[in-house]
Length: 171
Image (cartoon, rainbow, N blue to C red):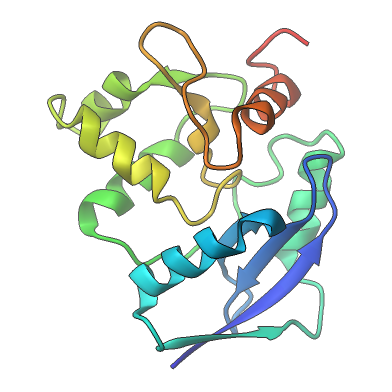
């Protein structure tokens, strides 16, 4: 049984839930309004019935780093320790997402090229959508090949806010 510790955090985008493990490593981050998505992703990563959530007793480094990010230090999340489940392919996509510099965006096609699989554009999109640590693993930095924002699990308005906050879109 995997025990995850939940912290709630107010943000400019609404309440967030952070899930860390016993070592304080960030395992998931989700908007409080998307509890069903959080449950689906945890079931996929850890197995249905093989994980549990308890309220965190102390503030994590992840929460402090996110507070700094929202306060304007857009690089505060770069060194945050993370752990995820997922397939090897998904983890390669998520690692490539973390390598996208703050203030930049790339297309799904470019992301597929960066992981060495240029024909896997759809699979990259699916892995991007299955990202359990949004904002920190910056799936919001991936846009459509036509320059449009495309989708975002938290909603396109939140994606636009994040990109403006990071300087990738004009305010």
